[in-house]
Image (cartoon, rainbow, N blue to C red; front, side, top):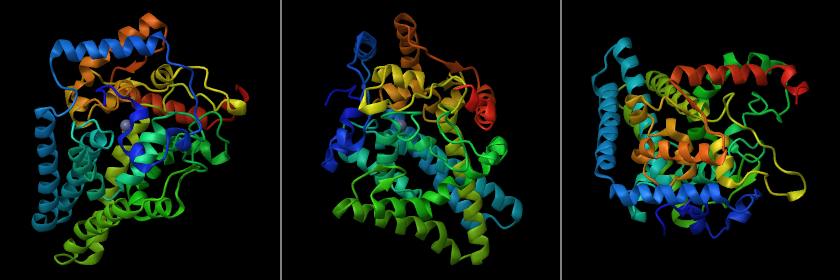
Length: 382
Ligand SMILES: [Zn+2]
């Protein structure tokens, strides 16, 4: 398998027995000179640097650091914290550590971008199950339904917050949406707990993620998903209940999950649901999109805070989502170096590349987009 294989070589779709055409209706025009140039230059970067695309020692060290942060936060919360202040600190630290594992470890591994070895990717993909969300459901929801066609309403599961919020121009507007830039943060906070307790079970039983079909897990995949859930409920709720009253355990779990959900959702939304991103619609009559796949990925995605090393470390390169969407099977530690190459190639080929200077600027753009999508004017102007 080539080091730069993109979506069509997604490691888990191939295993499911489904073809990509079965998984998604999207059709794109043939790759043109833009995508060819991108691939050639990124290949050249790997040749010149002599670094492998995956299995970077720094990534293994980062994984140990994040898992250590997670374990230390959990031990502190369950065995050390003895007051409201220390419990709050433990919940915040645990929620942020879980989000960090989600951004960096499970995300790379689920895309097959962590290691050359399938078993290593699979093992580290299961860190998501440890966090309470099924890596099986995620790989369909994220790798296929989001990555195949970001920002396309009806196909991208990540922008489907209907009927509560309207984040794409083609989604129906309700009166309450005018306040969505206030209340959406509460919904983001519920994301993790919803995955943990409702969505994964519902999706696996129905064989659907939102409006799209996925194969129901069977055999080893089903066993992994169910054992993952049991393990998660065990460490998150059962074990702490031996040491603390149940109401305290539930309260701490709710707060930790809220921080986790809010952090995850906000970061993923900052790259797509902003003023600078495009929102193409599904072409009529089974036609192909007008833009080729690579240009679609760039124009529906916006980078942010590329110069902030701390943000880059913690977000697992998700502030460089343009690189991630073009080369999801490359370890995220390469993203800062690849970003400049991609920006230059976009400029030369007339493809619109966008980046925000800071997290604050990206947040501002997200809020302005939510306000705009919540107003009737946005419908009339279409
Ligand atoms: Zn991804």
